[in-house]
Length: 89
Image (cartoon, rainbow, N blue to C red; front, top):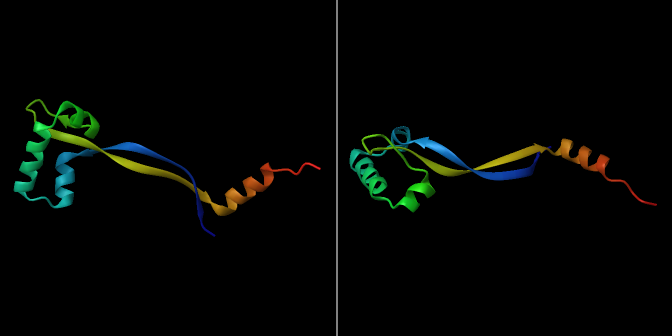
């Protein structure tokens, strides 16, 4: 038995900048370049990336689109489907 994809949605997922660069293994020159790019980003790019800054203007967080899926066991899906259909005679 497996699972069946029932529903999906793309949602913004907030990531802390400092955590993300540590997890990605970014070295200081790359971190500096990312901070500069974020600081120089246009208002539309800042909105689309969900960039957040602290009072000093340093990027603190951003958002990535994440796919969220609802899946169910095929046995549950099949039993629900067979119970919801009736034949007209």
